Image (tube, rainbow, N blue to C red; front, side):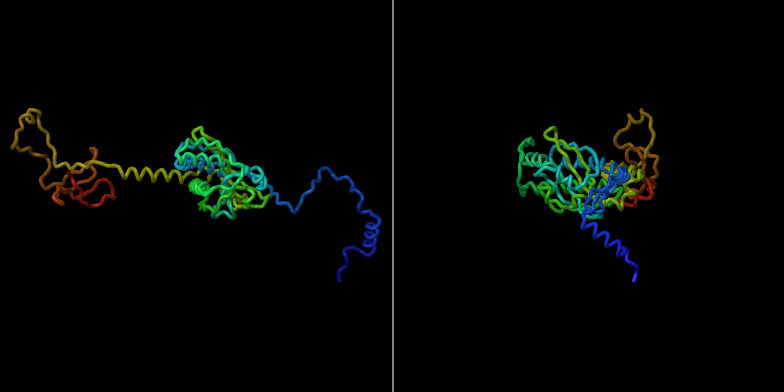
Length: 336
């Protein structure tokens, strides 16, 4: 058997000290440089900045302007204010009741996140949708949200999640999913009170009718696996998704452009006196051979050549030697 940690004499000395109250005496003064630390605390030391997250937040604010303005039928100005680290217990204490806070999932991030906005914003949009001016100054002291308000909140949150997916796409392919909406922050238990949250705040204003904020709460622990991406300046400056989206839209609009195609049967040069003397029945000799190809032009630029034919009772041109690139196919072009 191994030796005991304390000897019998030491055990007896401790028992005697307890009986005499020696262990209840005040402790000697501690070194001021020594600080107590609670090992059971959930406090987390957070180091490092995430510059890519700042770029994502700015991009998300721009997307919110369009989506929220469409729903509100008014111009909604959204600007990114700040992102900070805060404990979830403080968030619950600072939020007024009632408030509109929705629980969401942001796959592949672990756990749940939350989207919260002022109830005044919700009431103003509701007033506009029902034909009002949007200047709804009524404030509800307590009570749950009505079914209509919950449905509108769901629509707003869905738009916010769609914008988040687009804003985060250069960093991470998010998939937002609505879970539920609560009016009391105490009922939202997406994290322990001591857990650190990333709080992203946006300021919004509806045509000077009202102003408020939108807050997005994401557990800091869920961002830890992707901290390298969020800390990379190169990743934050990468705006390929927005660039590709613009390229796609421009490409689609260009393909929808209506162009006039002109088939040139032939050309010739004549003096003005000969042109003035032309009469019905005169024959004008063209420079083009009767069996030669005909040029197809658009806006004065030759795009192809072909031979004249008849298709469906109309004069047509079958392409034989396209000059506009390999994407052209041999097809029938109708010439009116």
